[in-house]
Length: 486
Image 1: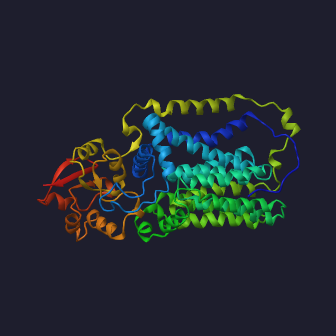
Image 2: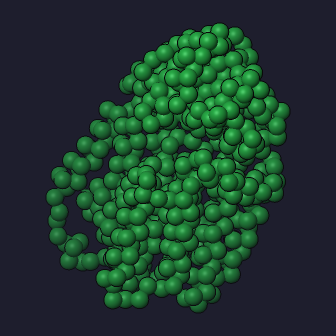
Image 3: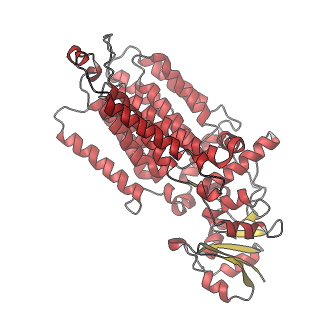
């Protein structure tokens, strides 16, 4: 990922407009995130788990959230992220959590920009590439443990890209990997970074290649620094190969044109291919290998598109500069030329003002201003059910109800791996009006059903339940309906 070392000590040109372009890589992603709301599909149950850890000073080992998997083993590999999220929530509520999301996204693409700059590509090109990466990755930047891992990965990517001038930065990678092993299941990607750096160093006959190999070994070892030891590797392997997960969860399925993320991925892939087709200089095979690995990962699962979006800009910035760092050498003629500061200052002022105006603390305390969740009326209705009620909720909603109405026990939630294939089959019978839906409800003694009425997610069973004398409506609004046993 890095070019051959340079011995030149020429200073780098610093222009006002360069600072403005550089700031775009961090400010624009932060502004876009602040304009959106957080999704609770994954976030909410992590907040509940984090509160449990903070309260008990122990990591949960079995499921206590549902009635279909109660007491089943739970490898809570993401416990570190849960503590961070819950602590942020305790510190300042939803506004602080929204601000943390914006900060993490901004830091991520600032590191991508800095990694691009190590190649010597221009400030403008690096900023455009980083923003392009943000655009492609945007569907995957929800507030959840993966976002923390994404920021760590971007930092490790920068450390590897800048290793020529700062060899010691390579040791950031195993530190980041150790943190990720306690935050998110993407930690197996971290050894890839120094491993690919080692291949690059061998290709260019860099005598320091041995250090990259040593860091690769250290990075692998660092992933074992977690409460579950080597079991986190088997956890990730089983999760990524589980046929139920790959069939039922969109982001685990192969990338197709059925979703926006697929179009973004296809467009970026075609863009890279078009750029290569126009080049007259042969692309080094290590760069092609970088792109091939992360392209294949992205096509295999939609959730892996984000890693392509981080790596591809850095590789492209290096390919674009045939002479290492030549683009950032000191130019005496440029240094003597004066340049107006006002456009750069105006751009910076506008972005800072946008951040101030969009700061989440101005939004008030209404939870709907911060998160996308079931309606307050539906939540209140479920909160009013007797404690211990067995609730079969629309799966994307279950995480929210686990957090907002902890007295109820849900059927399934976002922890897909916790539940058996039989449980998911039973859930499908009810959610999609299968022939055995009534038997499922009797078998599990379901006492309440929270069904979605929103667009494409409308439950097909709703008309049948409306006519069934065993069920009555306890609450209804345009988004959902709560049935309870008569």
